[in-house]
Image (cartoon, rainbow, N blue to C red):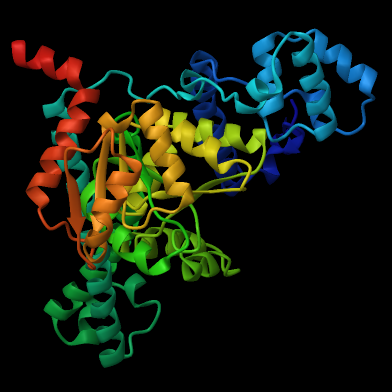
Length: 449
């Protein structure tokens, strides 16, 4: 009979397969492989458009070959091919010639944009909740986050007690392993020995809880959050700081908040630097301890091609990861970095896939003006909530007249320099009423029952 040393698992002797190796295998299988299977199914079911044509993305094909590819495509696919930033100028010229042959004018080709329905990413809800049920879920999530912070405060208190003991008594490292009578004799009091013993145990238990609370919360809330898009002025860091506080205090607990990244809305530089410290386990410590305190904004992807644009769509379909990160960031918005060619496509997919759109009118530049035009043309003003900083209220009348004259919003909510809304009750009522239209069918069924 062969010995245990000669048995092999995937080509590695069992004798050399330690607990550490099995832990890595379990993390890969249960953390990456198995969760990816339902995600792949949701992606196929969503039917997301794949407009990129490989032949049009490389400069290695001749004109005759590209013409043959274009002739086999239908009109809609050709218009997508001309629109997509990934395709080369040579390929777009061939596509334009083929569309012209099919009696499309150059002006029509240039002005064409994909239909709004092709940007919709389905919600992650297995079943849409009622308004009352979702409000209860928001309260539970707030309590879960409070528990995470209390656990962190408890760890700090216990570590302070241990430090005080170590300073006062010069405690040897192996004292916890010594017999109980030896510990009592060292401290000279059974009460002090008990306090030291229990604080050491509670530190370990609280550390385990600190790691477990975000993971368990990510599992519990993974199918139960709406998407919120935050549209805001770019490039002004002084305006971004109050808006960050406004996000975590008002809308961050209602769902997953998404916004595009700039120099003001990006991952905290200190947090990013500490994550790269070459000490084993230090990055995990920074993640679970520092992130809920500073409310770090996590970057979920960088969109610079059709491939990375699919990363954004896939993230919107994920369940555990957004839930887990949202707890660790205390409801701060996820940020998405994009190139100049892709930012409008990112905004369009987020507009069509979000349940609530929050628009900051504090400073309307060309980007915000384009976003307002998109809201009007696609009929999404109804699911939008408009806010403005207190020190920019004087510019509100001119902004509304210029950009929202035909579709004025029902209310504009003001927040101060600390990110606090001037009228929290009105803002909450407006947000709840807007979300109720998303949960309207379920709410109606609840009321009539």
